[in-house]
Image 1 (cartoon, rainbow, N blue to C red):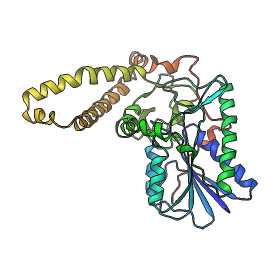
Image 2 (image 1 turned 30 degrees about the horizontal axis):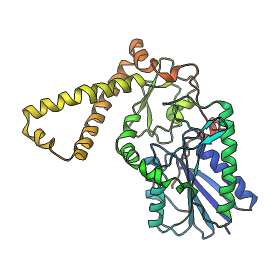
Image 3 (image 1 turned 45 degrees about the vertical axis):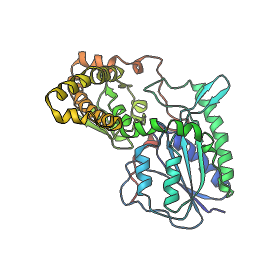
Image 4 (image 1 turned 120 degrees about the horizontal axis):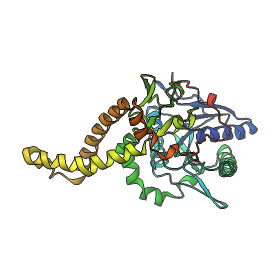
Length: 359
C-alpha cells in the first residue's frame, strides 16, 4: 500500500529514535523505503514530502502530560497535506516485578490528532510506547535489567503497530486511556504555560565541569549556551534530559536545593509579602487582586518566573566560588553514586549529532 515511510522525530535520550529505527526495520521487510529525520534545531520553511503513497510519522517524548513545545511548534509549521499520518509518543515506562507499567499521554496525542486533522491529513495511527522513563531529575535511571526488559516489551509492541499501520489499518491504541488523559489535562496546560519554564532552571554544572561543550553542542533545542566556559540553560530548555545523561564527567546536576529554596522564598515568603506591601500603597494593585483567580495565578506565575530567571543568573555567577557551587550544584540527589543515568538501548553519542532540517 505504501512505498515510502518518512519519520520526523524529537528525542532527548534516544527513546523516540529507538522506536523510529524499529519501525524502519519492519518497513524494510515489506519493501517500503524509509527516511528518519531529526527535527533538532529545525529551520524554516519546512517542506513536506511529496507523493501519494507516503505515510508520515511523528515520534516524540511526553513532557508534563503533553508533547514538547518544540515538537508542537514543528507540527504547527508543517505544511498542509493529504497524506496518511501517524503519531507515536513515548512516555515514562517502568517495571514492577514482571509488570511493564505505562505512563499517561495527557494531551500528547490529542493535540497533534486535532491539528493534523485540521491540516487535511488522514490520521491513521495514534499510539503510545512505555519506553524506560528518563526523568533523571526525579528518580535514578532504571536498572539495566529493567531497561532491557522494557525495550524488548516495546519492540514487540512496535512490531504490532508496524504490521497494522503498513497494512493500511487504523490503530488508535494510544487513546485507550483517554479518560485519564483528559483528567490530567489541567496539569498538561499548567506545564505548558508555566512548569516547563520553571524546570528549565533546575540544571547547573558542578566544579568538575571542564567546559567541553558536549551538552551545548548536542542540545536539540539549542537551549544551552556556554558562558565563561560553563553551560547556561535558557528558557528554551524542554528538560529533555539529554545534557545530564550525556555529560562524560557527570558534571551536570539537577539543583534540588535551588528549586526548593526559590520555591519557598518566592511562593511562601516573598510573594505574599510583596503583594501585601504593593496593595497597601497602590490602589491599582488592590483592584488587580480582585480579578478572577485564574488571572491572578497567571500573573503571579509569570512574575515569579521573572524573579527566578534573575535569581538563576545570580547563582550562576556565584557558582564560580566553590562554596556556592557546592550549595547549589553539589547538594542534590542526582549526585549520589547510585543515581544512574539513561540512554536508550543501542543509542550512542554520535546519534545525537545536530543536523538542522527544514530547508
